[in-house]
Image 1: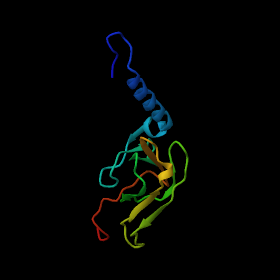
Image 2: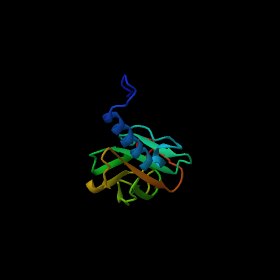
Image 3: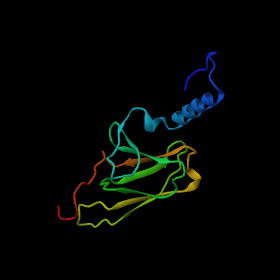
Image 4: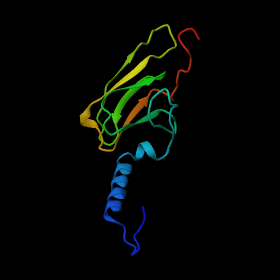
Length: 140
């Protein structure tokens, strides 16, 4: 990005900057005043956390619809919404056994009609600061 010899900025670059600015404005809560998210292996994609670690943001490539999976999230999820439009999403936990510390797998349904044209951001409101299970089974 940069100006041409006469100091003007090409229209294509202006468009990119405007689109980026609009996307940043729409998703500001997941970008600004956040901290680094959870480690790879728990979710396969970029994440951020609110400063108090009670809100987890997932960044999904543009055409990611269907189910996404989160491993090792010990927290209870209070609510999942799509940043920028507020649509509430459903989830289910699979493989959780009551007597085991292993939290099971979280599956989140992401319908095609909620996708952002560049990158969709999901907001998971947690019951307390994020806690991840890092053991190797139910007997650790």
